[in-house]
Amino acid sequence: MRIVAALGGNALLQRGEHPDAAVQQHHVHDAARSLAELVTAGHEVVITHGNGPQIGLLAAESEADPALTVPYPLDVLGAQTQGMIGTLLARELMDRLPGRAVTALVTHTEVDPHDPAFRRPGKFIGGQLTDQQARTMETERGWTTARDGARLRRVVPSPQPKAIVEVPAVRTLLATGAVVIAAGGGGIPVTRDPYTSRLRGVEAVVDKDLTAALLARQLDADALLILTDVTHVFTHYGTAHPGPLVTATPERLRALDLPEGSMRPKADAAATFAEQTGRIAAIGPLDNALGTLLGTTGTTVRTAPGGAKPEHEVLPAGTPAHDPAETHTTV
Image 1 (cartoon, rainbow, N blue to C red):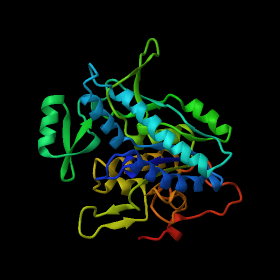
Image 2 (cartoon, helix red, strand yellow):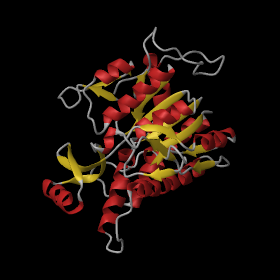
Image 3 (cartoon, one colour):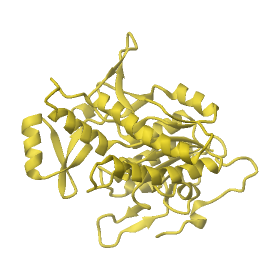
Image 4 (cartoon, rainbow, N blue to C red):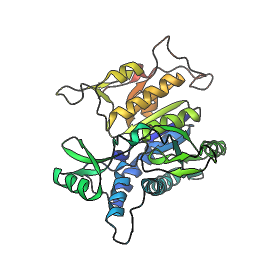
């Protein structure tokens, strides 16, 4: 199977943790073990990752650097996070997959310059701020902030991804047997001149989950895995009695009241992939990618009987069909 696995940025740097390199290396170490299990099981794997905490940290450092006339733009900072997280993942995977080529590819995502998101910033980046810190940043640096739980965080434009520029290169690398890390942080956001086709970076951060779903469709992937710091999508989220959701149709997933800044984009991306391809998507824990694929953990998303039909069988010919709902345990 060809699998696109998307790692959440908060899974690599969790809430409340110091953004030190050693902390992120620890989480990458655990993620690489989980991802390597997919590869050793015989699957083609393309990995993408979030960058919200990391790009927020770089943006704050850039804006505070007295050596700079103006801060680095978000597209350039996004490229930096691709390199930083990409090299951590690549080195860990090389150690776990000796003899296997692993490549981290700088990747651009084309967006529409007229996307309404540029007028309504809504993508969280960086760490949590107190009310006073948020007011200071809004006044001194022109930030837009929004509430994320008990605290405020910076929000920036997050336009819809239209196309991933390096898809042909990813296909070429996969054909050689390489494990590919691509479209990190949703991809470096660019617009394309309609007359010259020249690419130009824009001040935005593309949602990683939506880009992962687009990448999976453009690569004709058999499955999309969205791996994060929770075991399932939960019903009745935020109440005293949340319940783990084992399987869901896209319609069921979209009907849930999920947090806009965290689980909602993941649910929308999984639902969109399942609807448009008839194949499976799954949302599950970062430390068990193979279990999320097999349905022994996580939330499996697929169309209802009579809905969209797969363009081809997900499992290789001769492999018995597997129903994730039959073996999935709720914890």
